[in-house]
Length: 234
Image 1 (cartoon, rainbow, N blue to C red):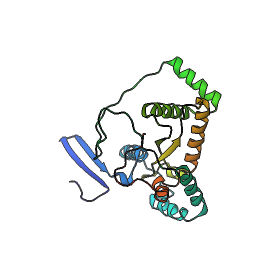
Image 2: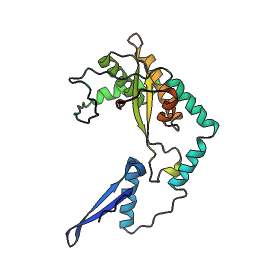
Image 3: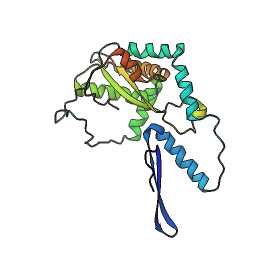
Image 4: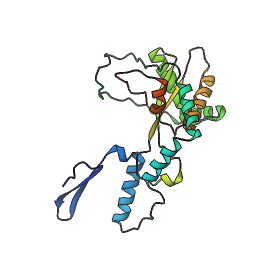
């Protein structure tokens, strides 16, 4: 039977004498994508009769460490970084959509994909090597330019998920570590792409280095728009 008011619920359905279906429902407050991978891997190993090594620390230890970290100077440095990045009014991406943005957030839509040829991929990798950036940085810059052209805006904020597991002891831990980096860039029409790519690189490295502070924590200090908040472009 399903338990009530639990972060993890489990149920077992018997289809036949030797055939069952295990149902799991885990709240996002106690897990993320990496946690689910760890959970499935360890469950399979236990089912196979293996013995798992005990964890050196637990999520509660991480929570205590994070609370203590919020009191030291390094936290203030991170806070200052994000306050500077968003000291100006945060832009709202105004894409030319077919329909007006609804008052109540909806999740309807579709996606479109494109497969690059091996030749195009090699040329992109050559560009990355020449500019000293990663493939992620180059694609993020291209995405910023695309959004800028569609929206007619030269101040773009793109949210990118990060695992948040900065310590090796957290790699096999189940818990909510994931966060979103809000990276701000300005793909002005008069700016060369290589110059803009260098700015994106700095934003990625700077944001990742200061990812210990939730952006909403700094957002409360920097101020924001009340009411409906559109999702960042991810």
